[in-house]
Length: 229
Image 1 (tube, helix red, strand yellow):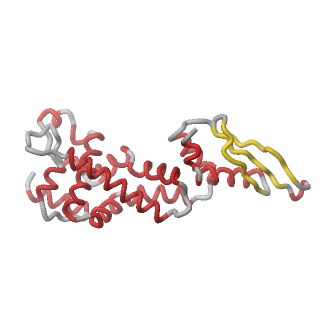
Image 2: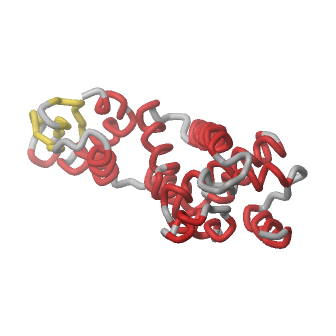
Image 3: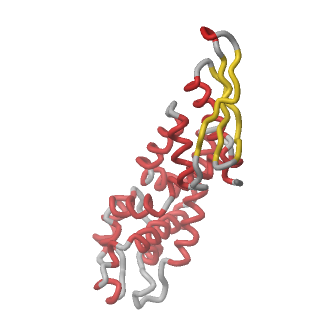
């Protein structure tokens, strides 16, 4: 790869390195016969990425529990997101690979793309500091963050909770009317949210739908309780 190639990648991520060797190292696969490779930078970049996303979610959603924040962060920084973003910026074409990896299609292997994008983030952090790394991360992950934020802000709590449970504890969700109060024209419903065999909470509303949504919202906001099941 020549300097023009490196500059093209820097333009795509919106950051220009003072120390170009950091970027070269971040792009070097262990199979390549070079003095250093991306493994140490990947370790650092993984931590920086989690910190940036954690910081963003913590400040964006002051009312969400630790469990929900953890789940949402996982959705943003999952392997699928990392490899997809790497492909969007054409990261594979810049990677230094050994002959074997090159021949086996290493430039498009999800595991390699995930590692390299984390290494690049680590390199940005070392070269430009935390705020430069934060800018790069939020720019690269803008679309994925937007999808997760929209899901949190949507009103269909039952669908959100269903998705979260299926991605984690993988248990069935059910809603059970525990009791009703008041006359037919002004009834208050009490509905229990049950995950697996465990009662998580009870939602209250003027209709079954409202009570179920309220129960599901409580489940989302206290998702750490469900994660411990």
